[in-house]
Length: 111
Length: 114
Image (cartoon, rainbow over all chains, first blue to last red; front, side):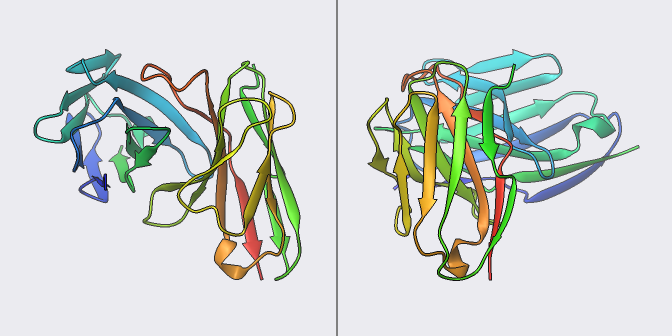
């Protein structure tokens, strides 16, 4: 059974710091991995999608990597800003129609 | 540019009452999903649909029913609400089931069962 884990559950950093959020999964047979952002009281917004044949994706200050063999993905945020404060979730798409979500990392960027 | 719209946003129910959550998408997506989100547990799939007139069970389907009579709408029903169904419900859609498809979410519906 696929399990997705995100550690740490919460993270507080000063503004301007580069940071890495981690996501691990137990079964390497995935179709894709997505990173989402969730603001309080809101839905999830997709940030990056990495297909199984890809190693990384970039969007602005965000870079996500995927290492299927080790069951890990990282989301790198450069030059963090207070507006980056949110919960970040990763999700893996497995066989059939299943997408398994991690519980998320709550990020707080201090001004 | 609405995307995925859910109604209502907030609702309080008494145990045993019934209600329906409505999800509408204007992106002509084939696949639609209902998830629930509980603290510390991530999102769990309740039911999903791969096209108009189809529905299927997800990970936690008990106590819920769904219908997809029109391609753009996906309804989630609670026949007899229980306190364990207190949660935040999210509707989502994808163009197809392919690996390159981004998931689009609604804003969520907060349900409290007392």
